[in-house]
Amino acid sequence: MKTRPLFTEQLNAAWSSQDSMLCVGLDPDPKQFPASLKGKGGAILAFCREIVDATADLVCAFKPQIAYFASQGAEDQLEQLIDHIHRQHPQVPVILDSKRGDIGSTAQQYAIEAFERYQADAVTVNPYMGFDSIEPYLKYTDKGVIVLCRTSNPGGSDLQFLEINEAHSAERELLYQRVARLAASKWNKTGQLGLVVGATFPEEIAQVRNIVGDMPLLIPGIGAQGGDIPATVKAGTVTGKPGTGMIINSSRAILYASKESNFADAARKAAIATRDALRAAK
Amino acid sequence: MKTRPLFTEQLNAAWSSQDSMLCVGLDPDPKQFPASLKGKGGAILAFCREIVDATADLVCAFKPQIAYFASQGAEDQLEQLIDHIHRQHPQVPVILDSKRGDIGSTAQQYAIEAFERYQADAVTVNPYMGFDSIEPYLKYTDKGVIVLCRTSNPGGSDLQFLEINEAHSAERELLYQRVARLAASKWNKTGQLGLVVGATFPEEIAQVRNIVGDMPLLIPGIGAQGGDIPATVKAGTVTGKPGTGMIINSSRAILYASKESNFADAARKAAIATRDALRAAK
Image (tube, rainbow over all chains, first blue to last red; front, side):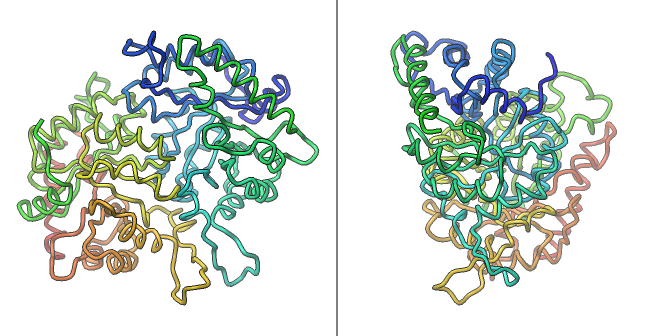
């Protein structure tokens, strides 16, 4: 396998050459597969490969969600899927969505999992345990490390939206803003960090963009989760660089656009519509 | 496989019948295996099985750390290891240390991974994404769900030790204390929640114990991480119930007490010494 470029270079190239900020999330749920695949060995790989081949020219990234493979004991199919993407669609970076977070010695094992075993170009991580839980990933200096910041789920506010009280600061700061500030400054030793910010809160995307400059934002929550595309794109745009800075994910709305044998065609149509909506909002 | 009791009942039985608060963490690192196992197929399972069989009468739980299996592509060996523990040592609950945290639909897949695929009795989870990232695990009403609260690593304070500012409260509250309060109240719908609190901060263990009543605390950080045993046990004791309420983990100091062919005997000796030190501190 050829050495792959820096994650941020891969993204810049994909945003430019594909003119797309769409990321297709690969969350394969066998219960939603077409009848022709149901119950077949290797169905997860076959399903994802068809989706990937049908949409690779429309996206800036693919994001396999490891939980869907782990629940089915399909780690080998995930390995083969990522290998397939690298070989057939080398221009598309692969973000392994695993949201790991653990002490340094364990994080090192997770980094091996993501970058050596699965050969991902980037990985999502959880900041709750602090910098040394993220540092081992940074030893892979060309790889992207995308830190959870503000998530789009109902419980996202339970902790992330708490206000931090600090005697030496007059400014109001919320927990997710602190994470953004840390990620954009002393944590970003490789220049390859990014942040996860949910599409359901465009105002907060704008807050994060304001803190982090042109750092890539992985934005889930459009499609099935209901985020508003024009508001999201407006909020996350890097000043002077429309069409960059965002990896906007849709999973279920594309994967399961049809549950019949035409699922790959339907996925392509849904991906085109979403990419075009994102383009129109630039 | 027989149905297993409630996680808290398993713990109570183990604390009582084994008179031990020791948990052996299974973090198999092939680089540290004795020469007789190095490079052999199935070495991870063989190593862990010997450790388990040498220490099962000394512990209140085993805690396999999934990262060490995932980095080696050894998920099948983890399945077989947990099956072996359930069959040979049914009195010892198994905590799968995976610290997952994701939106509800994904958390559901991780719950399948932990409880159906691996048949764990309990799982560790990350609270950063809030309650709906934890709720899917609670559908398995007999299973333990152990929430990260205050961790023992250097970066643990980056977020967990931040002070929360709330207009309606006169009391000072830190982020980890908020997590403890949520876990002990509205999140604990099954009565099977526990918390991870590192041994390097005995004062904070005492704070958490004060908030959560008799909730089980999983306490890593003794042994290789340097936590003080008497101070830890004193801080975490449930009033009137010495010898309960804590699952005190040691991994490396036991697993690699010897790196020669006598590693299982050495692990047993180290486990006896640690169990006895924990008993003496009651």
